[in-house]
Length: 89
Image (cartoon, rainbow, N blue to C red; front, side, top):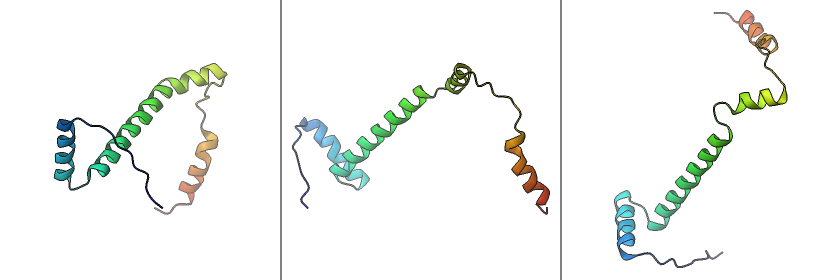
């Protein structure tokens, strides 16, 4: 299957910088562009995630829903307590 290609007009100074960077990293210009786009997409993803789930977002959601955390973690700790009781140290 043939790879579709397109042409992007890049100013010569930028193309030289790209070529130099690719050469110094031992990769191709295409691979370098792919890495940079991936890094930018990752940064955008994490930025959006941070803004959606900031440090207080969970607390606000809990308060809004009326589900106040009880602080009683008995159900969650029961399996751990059983596991520890059975452990031979």
